[in-house]
Each structure stands twice: as C-alpha cells, then as structure tokens.
Length: 203
Image (tube, rainbow, N blue to C red; front, side):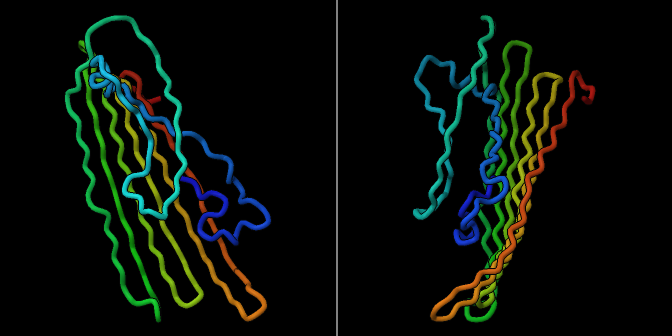
C-alpha cells in the first residue's frame, strides 16, 4: 500500500509532490502451488485487481509474470486451497452534526498447497486492515494500518515476509468568502521484514 500524490486530500500535495510518492517497490506473489491448476493444457488468465471496490474507486494495477522453466518430471497436483474472507466490519458512532467516528476492519487469508513427486510447495497470505476515522466540524483525523504476512514453503525451506504499513492523518481547514487555509499532517511508513529458514535452519 502507498499513499500516492493527491491521496487523502489533493490540496495537501500542491505545489510539491510527497516524499516517497514515486518510490513504490513491487510485491512478489509465488504462483508455484497453482501450477497444478495451470498445467492442464487450457488457456488461463492471471490478473491483478481490487476486489469489492465501489464505483468511485480508481485503481491502476499491473504486473509482470516471471517464469522459470524446470526439467521434465512428475506432474503438479494441488492438494488444498482455502480462501477465508470474513465480511468487512464498519462501525459508526455519533453523527455528522457533532462528532462522527467510523471504525473499519477487514482481513483475508489464502493458502494453497501443491505437490510434485516427493516435493511439497505451499503459499499462504494473511491480510489485515484497520482504520479509525473521526470527523468533528472542519477537523478530520484518520489512524490505521495495513499488514500482510506471506509465507512460502518449499519442502524444508521457508520464507516469511511481514509488511506493516501504519499511517496517521490530521486535516483541518478554515475558510471565509475569499480565502481557505489548510493545516495537515500526514505520517506513514512501510516496514518490510523477511525471515527465512533453509533446511530447518534460520538464515
């Protein structure tokens, strides 16, 4: 996740772009466990998109498919595939005429396991999102985070990538018939921690 230039409030980014707005590192998704589904001689479409978006949402996402060809051998077989996606929770207290508080939480967990001969491959991903938004008159404060944990297992080799993205936004404005003044603070960061084990030994 990235807060792009114009995010939160477009007026906050004029005339200069935000620090780190164009530093967008790519995300890697291991599709190896899906090989058992893809290697059936049929055409397949691998696409990236934003699910459950509304009509006002605009997202531009694309990807690059990286393939490594191996030698011939046993066929891929998908052992299990689970996709747990509870409904997004939105709780509202107060009212717009005084103080309005909105708390939004969501999560999703996907896991795929496949085998090829004696080798086992699995990929699991856990996604979590939390946002608390309060509005009082001309003041708006948003606090939240997005977190993902991706675990890739190839026999006894394990790689876990934990991405944590907290943010804090303070936004206040005042206006009269001629002028408008905005006071705002946008703090956010992206933390990526990689854990690995080779043959059961940490690296």
